[in-house]
Amino acid sequence: MKILEERILREGRSLPGGVLKVDGFINHRMDPMLMMAIGEEFARRFADCGVNKILTIEASGIAPAIMAGYRLGVPVVFAKKRRPSTMQEAYEAEVYSFTKQSSGMICIDREFLGADDRVLFIDDFLANGNAALGILDLMAQAGARPVGMGFVIEKAFQQGAERLRERGVRVESLAVIESLDDCRIRLRR
Ligand code: 5GP
Image (cartoon, rainbow, N blue to C red):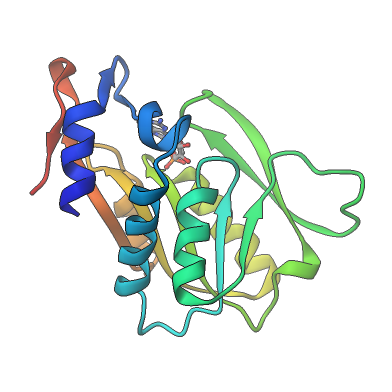
């Protein structure tokens, strides 16, 4: 997706440890016009899959997911990283966080995920795929069907896409980073 790629090259910063900083338009300050274009692109790519629910994880997945949900006309559910006292029955999975370098739980209220759901998972980044695998775990518990996963940015030098495709999941990434070596951002075009 050209406007996203241009934005990454112009404003992204390559940090040590293979981390891409895009705080200026995705992870801290957000650009609603770019987010809408991202949502439209996901909706176009997954238009033929019979999606009836979008899942994401708080916080940075919510913006692209809500835009895609708006375009596809389906509800958006975000997995929470803390279980609130109001959530009585939940599906839970453990996820290792690439950016925090520690494990934590994600959870979804059982009321909002079930066996009739054909789910599109949307997230900001695909790195090693742990967040996405945690979501697949929650879906398996609920009997929901994963029809695809869409990522705003995939880092191809990490194993996430491979691990998901091995499990038969359709993966679509709007920008693919080949490498962040020597503090340079190299995109796959
Ligand atoms: P994974 O579970 O695929 O290893 O990592 C995905 C999650 O880690 C994303 O939801 C994102 O929040 C975070 N993440 C992974 N790599 C990066 C990165 O290079 N930059 C930023 N800003 N977040 C990342």
